[in-house]
Image 1: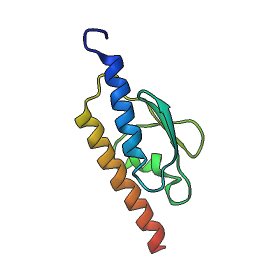
Image 2 (image 1 turned 30 degrees about the vertical axis):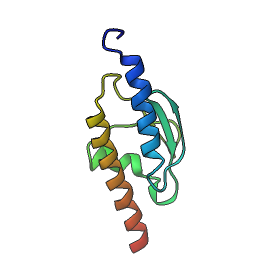
Image 3 (image 1 turned 90 degrees about the vertical axis):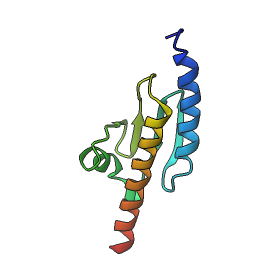
Amino acid sequence: MESDNLIQQAANHGQFLMESLAKIPGLENIRGKGLMIGFDTKGPLKDLRKHLLFDKKVFTGTAKPNVVRLLPSLAISKAELEQFLEILGETVEELSQLTVKA
């Protein structure tokens, strides 16, 4: 862990991830430390975790019905985080569009 500088990398990646999550409309109360991150979803995004898992094959944790938890590997790359953020953003937009059409 020390030779790969994983602790500092986790702090840097966590900050990048939290700043990026804050730019996605509908995600609320983004919080965490390092790569342990949680955020709230409401309304049209209440089933976000289910859609990520079953439609996009992206596993996230849960704490309450409307809280999504992230706890990726300390060795995750920035490219992998960017891929996750892209999928998350697309899914949020898809769910938001379903509500607009309804």
